[in-house]
Image (cartoon, rainbow, N blue to C red; front, side, top):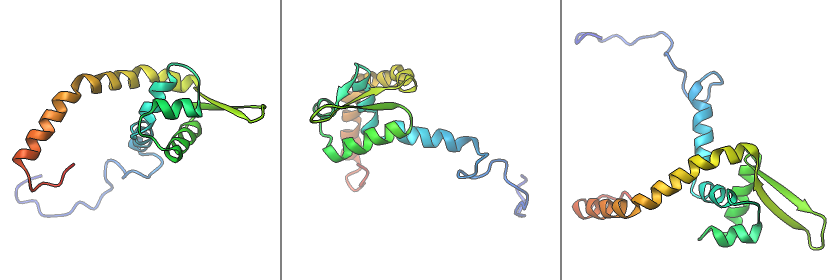
Length: 140
């Protein structure tokens, strides 16, 4: 485009906006939204160690409420990453385990968790420094 160019191009854009079935970014964004949410990574890391019952998961994932854990495992089940098995006992026992697809994700999620642990102190220092230098900023 030249400096003097002032016309608006009326032709179609090279990439359709997300939401179009043929847009390659839509599937990536959708999957990353699920896998990258606050609780899914922690649930996947825990299930990488083997099947867990609901209460075991809740105790292992510090700070998650019963409602949020229920939503998280249901979403992961819907996405084909977690398998929920109900055993015909009284009371009914339920366990959760990773599917083959979920298990194929564990090395990536564990690497992200390991990276987070390794860098959390440096990130905390950077945040404090930023907040000290920008006290009016509401980014948190």
